[in-house]
Length: 140
Ligand code: GDP
Image (cartoon, rainbow, N blue to C red; front, side, top):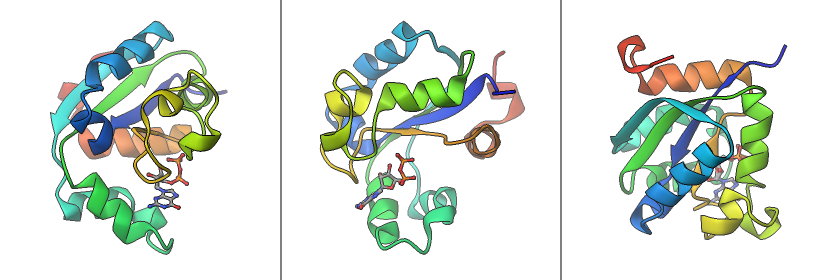
């Protein structure tokens, strides 16, 4: 059975461009409830650990540098079929290929600086949520 939680981050580009409010609004309007929320700045070390699974990919260094370049917003979200529905809401990794009206189509600037993260499985949503939040910071 598909789980009902996902994990997201509003990435440094979208924060810097003033889109926190609009993105959270679009997330809420799509039926997601916010269970945990944090405005924080990842060190290069923490960003590297978060994206450890991408270590062998050619863009890993760029990704870590970008994700630690400024503050981010991390959140745990709840909705039926959360993983799939949220991936649909954010759109393709490359904003040039993201469907119209998706968060990445609306706010991302490039394949690297693509406004938001969305967990790709129930298992990763739990791992990523626990990376950012203590149990006492999750409400739901
Ligand atoms: P996602 O699940 O849609 O976020 O995509 P991936 O898991 O494939 O990649 C993780 C993140 O790495 C993406 O969201 C981008 O921020 C970054 N990324 C992916 N492909 C590239 C690339 O070709 N160049 C750069 N600079 N960053 C990339």
